[in-house]
Length: 394
Ligand SMILES: Cc1cc2nc3c(=O)[nH]c(=O)nc-3n(C[C@H](O)[C@H](O)[C@H](O)COP(=O)(O)OP(=O)(O)OC[C@H]3O[C@@H](n4cnc5c(N)ncnc54)[C@H](O)[C@@H]3O)c2cc1C
Image 1: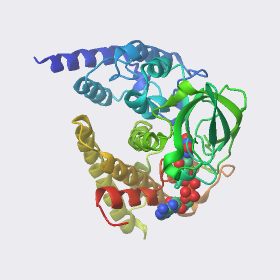
Image 2 (image 1 turned 180 degrees about the horizontal axis):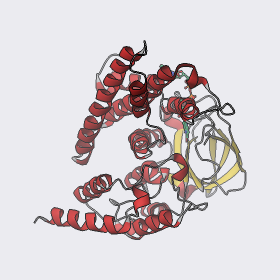
Image 3 (image 1 turned 180 degrees about the vertical axis):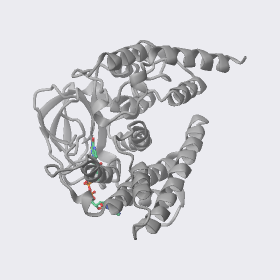
Image 4 (image 1 turned 135 degrees about the vertical axis):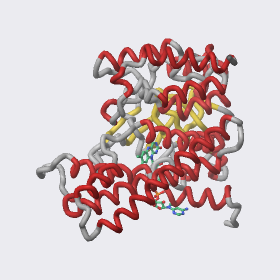
């Protein structure tokens, strides 16, 4: 038996012994465990699974042990991922820091920065948020205006960020700030790490029509950020920010995939068709259902192929934009199909009587729309694909 096969056998046995059966059920948004100083468990199974994985360093299986990771090589990390999927193990914690910031820190951070930030991340002790978007800088991110001015050993940060997911629970923020207002806009930006407890940071939650708002506005009023929290070179933040967005796009399809919604729209359409076989809309809905099922299957296969390519260190920047676009638009189409099947029943709002399905479909549809915007809107992904994948003139 090869060493990798041995590792697979041992990993499978360990997961089977340590992942409680309840942690193999599909997860809903309310059941997700987020690391950080406000870490909370709903039950003993969640805690046991979290602690078992943390002790092995398997929140970040591929990182060096020195930084709190599991020290696995790429193939072993892939085996762990496969075995977790096989047993339907939940993600033991959700952590934007591990998925998005860490790859950038591993590549560009100093040893001291890695020790300071990766170790607590790998232990689930710190929760991160992303401070990129501003009121007039979303798709056109390079227009951001939050300033960081040098002052001795610190920067003084002034300005504001918007749409900061989970800003109200985060311990730290990775942010893009303007450090050279005179330079061409992409050239004057730096990537800094900001302690959310710093004096002068104010966080205000924003309500959303989907009912499940994670959004916040974050205001900076003369916030002191030590210069050692600058990642990469001064004014080189744009390069790092672009890299991070690629990791975000990859993480988003992982996020959506792990977070099985409490409602499976296509299964609900199937059930509806079984109950209403003679409905005038049934033939059209059946055709759309078949197409979406095939699309989902094609997406799953492509996802596996791209994961393999990434493991083999191929450049997957283009595919990441394609995957993000396709996966998020497919989710919207699934909810729209179910809404069309339910007809007026899909318009039922919170306080109206419902079987439960109606409430979930409209909330789910609204939520699915947000993923077509987060991490770069569908239109922006199309631009990226046109430019970087197809090489079309701009
Ligand atoms: C669920 C969710 C979570 C988010 N979390 C965070 C977070 O944690 N941190 C953070 O910093 N930001 C976050 N965002 C913000 C997100 O990055 C921005 O909303 C996104 O980049 C779009 O920017 P905008 O909202 O300013 O829209 P705009 O940029 O104003 O775009 C408005 C419309 O114009 C279109 N458009 C813009 N430019 C072009 C173009 N060149 N070509 C064609 N069409 C164009 C867009 O597609 C969109 O339809 C989040 C957003 C969502 C929905």
